[in-house]
Image (tube, rainbow, N blue to C red; front, side, top):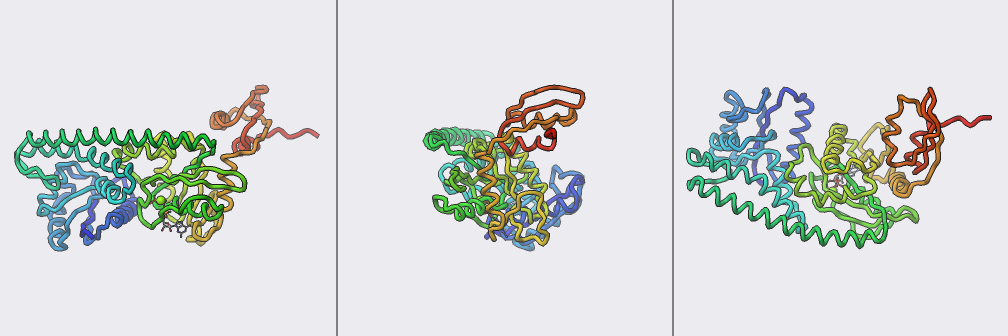
Amino acid sequence: MTNVILAGIQLKSQSEEEFKSAIEECRALCEACDMEIVGELYQKANSVDLKTAFRSGKAEELAGLTKETDAEEIVFYNSLRIQTAQRISEICGDTEVIDRTALILQIFSRRARSRQAKLQTEMARLQYDLPRVTNISDEGNHQRGGSVTNRGGGEMRSEIIARKYQARITALKEELSHIEVQRGQDERRRSKTLLKRAALVGYTNAGKSSLMNALLRMNEGQGTEVYEEDMLFATLDTSVRRCTHGSQEYLLYDTVGFVSDLPHTLVEAFHSTLDAARDADLLIHVIDYADPAWQKKREITMDTLRDIGADKIPVLTVFNKIDLLDDPHVPGLGVSCRTGVGLEEVSAGIADHLYPKQMTVTCLLPYDKMALFDAYRKFVRIEILEQNEDGMRLKIEGPAVYAEQFRMYEEKKEG
Ligand SMILES: Nc1nc2c(ncn2[C@@H]2O[C@H](COP(=O)(O)OP(=O)(O)OP(=O)(O)O)[C@@H](O)[C@H]2O)c(=O)[nH]1
Ligand SMILES: [Mg+2]
């Protein structure tokens, strides 16, 4: 356990509620990093002060709190410039100062198990540190470093460090690409079975691994259960299991969870791990519906999917943890991995999406509903039968889940 102080600036653009839930998440991140929060300090401001993050006397208050609580580290919710972190560290008796990005990187370092996850995490860390090491050295002649030490030596030393980092990054990239080639071969072998693939995606702690285990238990799938835990970033490695629904078989992938402002270096480093999502025939978006911030987290997941180039894949949205709610109303497919409610529907939903029943719909689509045409043209075959003043007469053929979207404009059978 490391004793830490959690600190943050509430910016003007953030509502009280948003800030509160962001700080709550920071607490969970600290916990996942084996830190104990011994003090907290927040301030409202228009921006993060470039010198000391906090303004007018608050930085001194932080120094006092650090001393009083004997904190070993200060964790800032906001992103900090290197020089700002250094300055705060100096004011607070050389206590280490890290920001949320560094915190997430630290969690990944601790939790990485597979060789691939370890290498990816190390690479992300080096890429995050590199500009810091070089930057500190620029000022190194006048100022002593905080968390990243540079005791004298000036530019020469920083150049040596930077070169070392670069060399290590190059070596890591090489080793990772070897692993990727190996993995590619495994995948090709797997794809020979022509099995469809579904990947579980979503915000961290939503219940992806739990859903995988629940589906495995229900359908007597093959393979051992995966690790699930009430902790952010329990899963860092992609696992794959064979699943069935009746006679239909498919591969189910469990993936690393997302978080707001996922450090860019991490997204980059985990690119190949996230292939599981990119290559899937279907994404199962797991939402923790008991979380009051579920809508925001859903958006973040969608944004991240866009970032990694997985936004064109069909999505089955699953609202999890409904056992925790009083109101059983759910805006879609509700499920509880804990009680098993809704699992059957999820399993059927996955199979329907992967092995869709075909359907033909003839409809008259009004011109102001052409967005529907654009949204589904990739998934169904559309034949334009006729254009008249009311709209377009279309014949739609394809998987029922998509073709059904046109049903409300279906032409009434005469007679
Ligand atoms: N009450 C309740 N808890 C659930 C349910 N599903 C999962 N959980 C709990 O939620 C926590 C997170 O579950 P995981 O399956 O590890 O979540 P994850 O999405 O895989 O999380 P990461 O791997 O960290 O991204 C665990 O403590 C689960 O027991 C559910 O339906 N109801
Ligand atoms: Mg998991």
